[in-house]
Amino acid sequence: MRNGLKPVLFVCLGLVIGFPLFSLSYYTMVRTSTPRFCASCHEIRFAYNTWKTSTHVNNAQGFVADCMDCHLPAPQDTMEFFYAKTAHGIKDIVVHFMEGAEAYDHEKEREAAYAGIKNAQCRKCHRNLLYIPDKRGAMLAHRAVLYPMPGYEKRCVDCHRDLVHNPRGHYAYKQYERPYRGLGL
Figure 1 (spheres, one colour):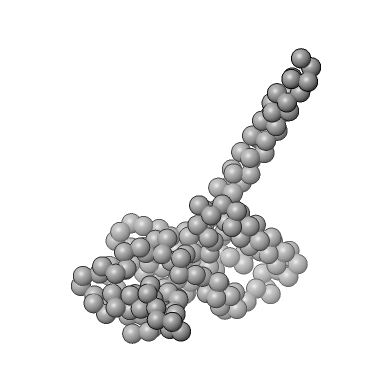
Figure 2 (tube, rainbow, N blue to C red):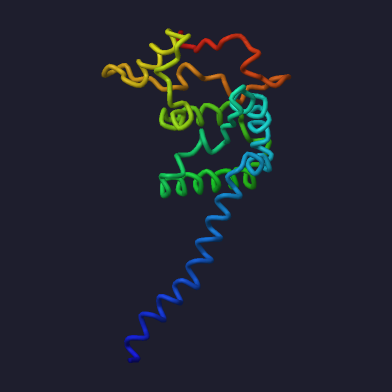
């Protein structure tokens, strides 16, 4: 009887310790995945303010793309998401405390961020790219990105480079601006 009780005791002990640890980890990930949390760091405030004035926040569809949507893998890829989020967080903390806000080069960091953005990150939100009835040129350009010929692969940010994180004196509402022409057209 004593040996039969031991596994049950370990399972109960695992639940008592594991559930709060998992809950705290999940709660921490959720709370630190907001744009407002990102903006709490001096170095990131510039990116936050330029994001707020972009069409990724201000658009007729009412959709808002947060920092995590572009800069991290999809949360469904749990291990990759946690790894990337942790690595970014540790890097930002080290830079903040070791080098300070003065050493933060926005242009260099912007280029590094663009280099790391994959098409899959854009396609989390922009899914229906081949069916834009009033913009045939955009449909053809997107088809070339989605189904590239070998050796002609392109990334979304090759054409759509200056949509976010540009200093503006106004809020960019997409419905009131001239139609966007990608850099590649």
